[in-house]
Image (cartoon, rainbow, N blue to C red; front, top):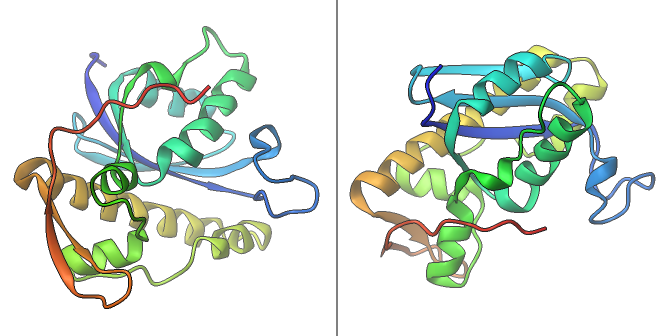
Length: 196
């Protein structure tokens, strides 16, 4: 696969910072359950389980740009550590790739956060049907197919929002208090530098 792919991705994990055995900010203790991905070069969605590191690495190795939602503060650091721990070949450092985090772009422009569900509902007319915390329950109960479907729905929503973001340089952002929709214009996406 040639260099230069753009991947939209989302991870689900089998635990979270709020677990007593983890602790807030302890990325080392977070374990991936599945990773959902969309490749613009392949025009294909895929969802990988944690044990499918080789295939997942191939997709991410071929990418020059990563797109996500709240990905710089959670998905990227967790996935980067996953690749580092695997020990298979040269370390794949996701921080060295160009990254567009839609939530960060919104925060930089408006000063406010918004959920993926509310953003999708305002721009696509479709809200999320489940909350992220339910993904951990799905994994613990062995509902892997349902978990993959949930993860890929987030990837699809993020991809469709990113397409609007790129083509129109704007998104509809509902006001946090009133819910009144406002169309917000964006400059070119900021290229995020490593957090650590």
